[in-house]
Amino acid sequence: MHELDRSQSVHSEAAILVRVTLEDDRVLGDPLEELQGLAETAGAEVVGRLVQRRGKPDMTTYLGKGKVEELKFLVDAHDADLVVFDNDLSPAQIRNLERALEVKVLDRTELILDIFATHAQTFESRLAVELAQLEYSLPRLKRMWTHLSRIKHGVGMRGPGEKQLEEDRRLVEKRISDLKRELKTIEDRKERQVSGRRSHRTVSLVGYTNAGKSTLMNQLTDAKVLAEDKLFATLDTRTRRWQLPNWGPVLLSDTVGFIRDLPHALIASFKATLEEARQADLLLHVADASNPAVYDQIAAVYLVLKEMGIEEKDTLLVLNKIDQIENLQRLDGILNRYPNAVPISAFTGLGLERLAGQVSDALSRGFVEVEIETAIDNGKLLAYLAEHGEVFSRRFDDTHMVIHCRLPEKNLGRIDPKTVVVRPYVSDDAEVEEDDPVLAELLAAERARAVTNEDAAAEDAVPQDTAEDVMTDEADAANPDQDEHVA
Image (cartoon, rainbow, N blue to C red; front, top):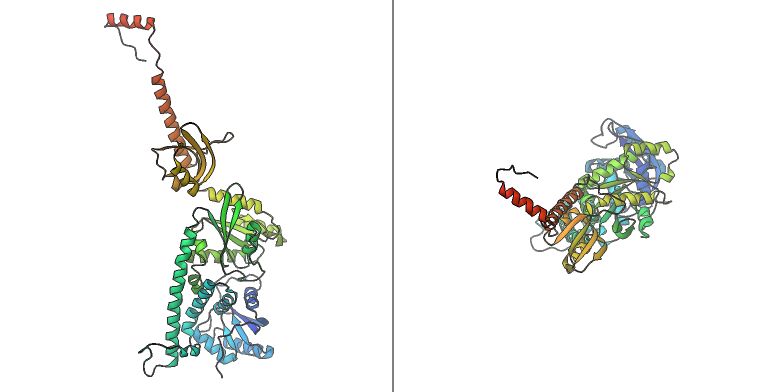
């Protein structure tokens, strides 16, 4: 058998889709629906399908021997160029299948990498995809990089009798090292950029691929980012300003979509791209409520967030595409399971006002609304409040000013109490919520200060003794044995 060219994209190739369903796998609806979406996104033409249920995969070919023969018949009947598995295969299994079928065989991970390579537009994303592809392919290396042998090296780089495969492996390992160094530089720069935006609260969209994140971002910010009904339409993070009612401007970011069994190498390679999500104040987890596998997709996203180390970050679940749900009882079932979720339709705009209110409430957690009284010439404090909080109003008299503002609790503690008076803000038609510990503490301090001021005022306002009082005091002095009265 001639050696197969595995370096080319799957675009325009005729493909047979295969899935081996194991005992522990949950299957809802069509078991090959997602794989078909991936294959079509990659540009392949699906010409056949094969599904087998097994207790455990075959160590040699993953499929059973009889199914391999059936698959070979399908390949010949449809003149297929490619077989795509919805499973992760070992290098040996891929080689054995290619020998038996005489066509190229891809597993799920390699197909996803092919899609990412096709959709990568920026320098950063292209580097990340190349790194993920090389790390995936290194253990599968078999004369795939012979063209790299033309690269010159220094003295002693190649020993006598070294095989071409070993030379290729060395070249790939060097390229991986170079890519990691370049991506680390980009990652550090990206982290500084994101950290430099701390004057604004940040919200990041995360979710399963094709859940409608880009459509939602366009609705909220008029960002005009690409929004297509296909998997992994967006690979590069985009950040836009979102004018949030009852809050003010926040920065909203759209990130790459997740998927079930997302390759670990991709998560690591796209660390710089996902920096927005890691440093966001709030995550909006967008899920496709119309998809029968919505529960599994929500769980898959949380697994990726856990792998990124941000599973405990403040997150608001957004159930999108409710306009496509025909049976509202199904939506009720999802809301019963996730009672704090916000149902919306990014396409029609339904529920977006409620979403904005929920986001405002979520961002308000950790903030306090206060009045700060300080000297009229305290410009340093004014600059600090403008940088770290939101100033609503200022009132002045001859020597002092009172600033009504909203501020993070952590920043409130950095204000010098010797030069300012901080008290909770109470509007004319509202009362301070006593269950807020920070406001309650401020309120208690304000009350104590008020009592102290009243006592001081009372001492200053002691009335002068009258003539009758003086006469009484003289009488008491003349009768020392009289009992003393306790006020």
